[in-house]
Image (cartoon, rainbow over all chains, first blue to last red):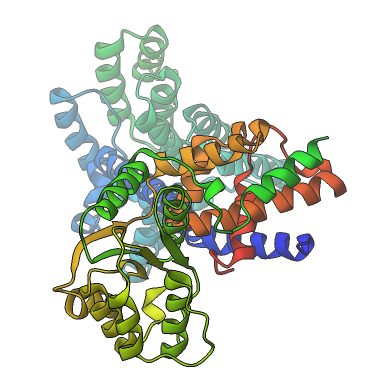
Amino acid sequence: MHNIHELEQRWFKYKVKLLLPYIIVITFSIILVITLIFITDSQYKYNSINSNDQDKIINKPIADVEPKKEIKQTIVKKSEEKIIVNEKDTQAAKLTLSPSLDFMKKLKTDSVNSYDNTDVYVSEKFIEEKPKTTKVIKNIKPKKVTSKKINISTRETQNDIQQVIKRFKKNNNPALSLFVAKKYYKLGDYEKAYNFALITNEINNEIEQSWIIFAKSLVKLKKKDLAIRTLTKYIRHSHSGNAKVLLDDIKSGKFK
Amino acid sequence: MKSSIYTNSKNVFIDAVNPKDYVQLDRVSTIYQSLKNSVKKPLKMILLYGKPGTGKSMFLSKLHQDLSKNQEIHYYMTPILDESEFYRVLAHDLYGFNEKKELNFTQIMKIIQKKESDEIPLILLDEAQLYSDALMEKIRLLSDTRKLKFVIALHKTQTEDLIAKEHFQTRIWESIELKNASIAELKIYIQKKLMKSNCFDSANMFSNKSIKLIYKLTNGNYRDTNKVLYSVFEIYEHYYNQDMSKINLDKISNKIIEMAAIHTGLIDA
């Protein structure tokens, strides 16, 4: 009689030995397939991220793309020129707001507009190379710092705004940037209000409030003419009632 | 009792040369008929060759059984390697020579030539590859007298082929090669063998798949097949008595076939 137990063990070893090459090949194939899927997926994601970045770059205003050429000019001059340039552009294409260069730089140094990493890099570089312009911006800053009396409430509001900015950086929601623009406007920080209105407009140029905050901020920054021109253009495009009212107020001097 | 079925089935495959166990397959029957016809012809020698386990011994045994009723036939399953002993045995079996003294070739030739008979005795020599070349040469000379007719069965190996081709080249008029079974023949062989012993249940347990596996393991060799199947039914018998849950009573398990093959050495595990 056989030693069945031993025979079963020998049979089991034989089967394992027999199937081992197949198991190895199958396992290797599965690993290979998973790796290929992973690599393909990563490449797809990488490509889609790159294409998004490219889209962002393309959508950026001219002021963003060519900042160095006009660095030596004053903030006022630059902003005027840019808006003029923008006016020319908008005649051909859709109506969008263009930022003044100095505000964009300011925006970058304040890390408000750092939702794009490349912008942060550019701003740092800019600060190193051109300290003078930074100074000019700093000179303007005191406007937003009003009095010590409202400091406590301002800090809380600033904290709120920073929270919203953080959220905006994550999701690029124009409602958030518009909220920030309004908040800054209320706080009297018209430069930031201007910039966030501009960012909102970049994301969606159909939002009426972004145009209004933009124009209001320009008026507050003593750019009444630019504000009138911008609003006129917008009204021509959108026939917005609110914009017309604001334009009339600016022209008549009710809104200063 | 199922256990006794497995025991009976096991015994069917005991590797023994018994003409009663001869299984008629189409190709084998044709070859056998050809051998019987060759024996009737006035030929001096007939060579039956093939690989071990292809049924040469069974053929000789069957031939001996079938022809012994009608003609003088002597079957030597085991080779008589001593030359003198070989002559003495031949003289005794063929001519009733009872002297215990040693015989040499000259003496046996004299005895054979003296013998006058119409019927030429047929001598079947199995495992002829074991005979020395010198003795084989003497056997050739004995056959030349036309007083004896030899059927020589030997294994087909490279060396033995040389014997067949060179040593007996001019003497062998008929050579028959036996080969392993095909899958279809193997299935018929197994089932006929079992049914001959009334093991119908066991015969029905073999599917084409299990036959294919047996063929793969044995290459259709009858002796290896007998060995594997003996072991298969031995394992079944064991499981039936010890742990019935491990076996399927309706179908021969491939696992058990492989276990049997491992046990018989056909699988190196």
